[in-house]
Image (cartoon, one colour):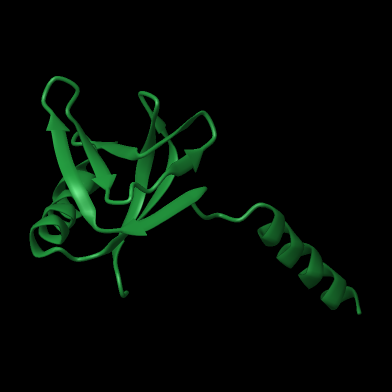
Length: 110
């Protein structure tokens, strides 16, 4: 019985505080814009899709090209999805300069 109650507490902890991004939007990419002054890439989904992240919300998402993983893996995926008109699911977590920060990108269907 003690194992069951411990397991229930662990499960409840994940349910209350999930380790997932706060907001996810799915759609076709309308615009990918890189600002060379800030070295940030902004993404706008058709719709538009609104992202609600504590401290920042809006229809544009962002990440920094200084983030090596974003620049090497995610940015090329976004460009391919834009040019081939493939639907994506963008998850955000946190903010950069008042814009929701891109946490993950998935092609749809996954």
